[in-house]
Image 1 (cartoon, helix red, strand yellow):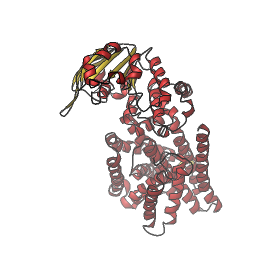
Image 2 (cartoon, rainbow over the protein chains, first blue to last red):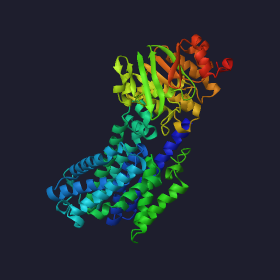
Image 3 (tube, helix red, strand yellow):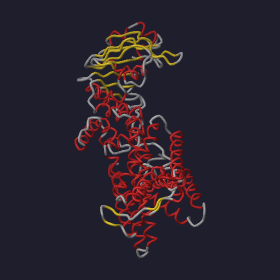
Image 4 (cartoon, rainbow over the protein chains, first blue to last red):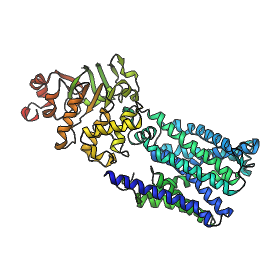
Length: 317
Length: 240
């Protein structure tokens, strides 16, 4: 039993590495041209958000159907700080993470009383509200004209080419992946799982259920917010249409298709879904339809998601 | 050490507990018995703060327990097990037990050693790394006990620890309970009286939310009210 657990862990790491290597190698195989670099860096940013969502959904057992809202808060914070004050990307990412974390309290505090469908509705509404505010608060956000980022510099070094942003994005993704993979083996990760699996037993074990739920929201949103700042640096421009329901749906699908409570599964899910949505991007509406179809297919045929490729005996959880 | 006075719980028209008094000293095994619906689990839930009584007081080591949050009880020295185990099903058996130590911020390595030692003492060393939700029910109950016991509580509440445990595991479980009661108070609900009555120092018999008898096992065994109510006036030898 023990040896098979170790074996399956190693296999999951292999799948995670495979996903990362494929994504990193793609622009190299394309001869470092700008567009492949952009696509790969965008995958890294989206995968960070997917991992942050799995921390919330898979690890702490809460749902978010509006994660693009936290992503948007981070992107706008960094973009506006850059456009107006020429703020460094690192500071922008910290500000973005902080703003998203603050936003998560709006959702996370009611989350201590809500669960399941009701929490789904609240987070969905939050995501829609953030995109609407970005559209309507033109004095701050320029509405649908968006915000143009000024020169991107990180800790004083100017990131002049897509190659630089690509490198930064994958370093950031690796950091988030290591955090997400290690979380279950920490005291905090166990508290998340305890609240997810049995609130009454969690309380009996000295865990404050409400505080733990809010903590999960804050951490998840902060990561999504930092990813948003990277996204602003990558695209050089943020506008409301990048942060709609379909974007939240994409993040949700990455986690569900990959398999909740699995870092490797989420990475693989992110790769598959990102490839699908990029591949279908030229035909209007097709990508959203395929994302929806992927969620339905997984729910019907492989409830455990792609992680069931290497993890067995977990049924549909 | 634990003092319940006049504890009354009302759910609408139902009165699962009606003025129950209970005193549990520092050490030993204290048994609460009674037919289904007698209010045993409700009493345990009151003490562990899952149910707030409409009247009465619950004090532990001089403190008013009713003023505490459920998550404060472990810090006060009270741990419990559950009738249906209530394990963290997605975690390994070892991680479940580790949660029982997490409130003390024991360094990870030392905590792992202690949790593993606790599992081994209950014969669960071989399944330490198995996902708890996939374990057979009897094993889950043992993990639940290990999780409560590892925190070294002053008062251990056990809700039918023998229910669903296979015959092969019962001696280990009884030994663990007896050892636990040596240097702490154990308050236990259990139906398998033939197995646990001899271990108990005192027994409280509940019926319809009221205490109908209280005393050492040998008295309880012969109490006419107990025989009438709990045993339906027959099959005494069989049930005991």
